[in-house]
Image (cartoon, rainbow, N blue to C red):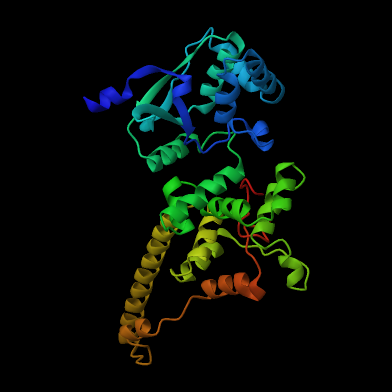
Length: 352
């Protein structure tokens, strides 16, 4: 019964929505100018003063025309309700119900635009949920993370906040949000480590995403710092698998990078690696058994006993060659024909 009551859609007066838990920036251009969306709505759009309402309309039309188009559709289409969180506040000794936006802030602002244009009080259709502030924020993240208009910096801020609040490594953050580790690592660096003036250049389109991330990670001069020209390292899929098999499980960053090249999650890559090594051990055991039987027939006694093959196993030539080719002079690895100076940039990734 409670769940059904929470999902009920009901009209909420615009002036009762006072905070936003939304991780997105619904009025990006105006926010870049120092304007906060809900402050604009309450001081201008919902004002009794026609001059202030006209100022709000002019700002939206000049800087956020997509809000105007959204408001125009409300007259002819049924719109999706916004999601709100309700809470109680004390005003002059009385406790009143107020609301915070979880998702749908642009829709709310479009309703406010209509009120500013017409001068008639509007309500927003909403689903109201019982949520804590933290629950509201992370529900808003889940709803909005896949939106095309969420910037890479905003994604980085979300990943960084989640890692800090949950005391979690970035590899675990990537698993939680079902995104590649390199994407989380790069966006967090972009949002938290890139100097403000360089970040401004990126947001203005004067610095591309790949270079911005490399700079944030401190890897933009990696080739020059080695004092030599970059050269390609060509690895076959078989060699990459061999390199993964020979990498210690404690080297999480290297495992993540190799798994990304193979287009696998780390869990999938480890499972496949375990299967390969198991098959190799079984093949070695069969080979030993065959050689032992052969030695009995030929009378040759110089062969190692079966247990000697496993007390001091030798790595295969293929694994040695692959590991040497990758590790040589700390050179970065890549798939055939593709050179990657940055472990954050992989073939066919959004950073390439």
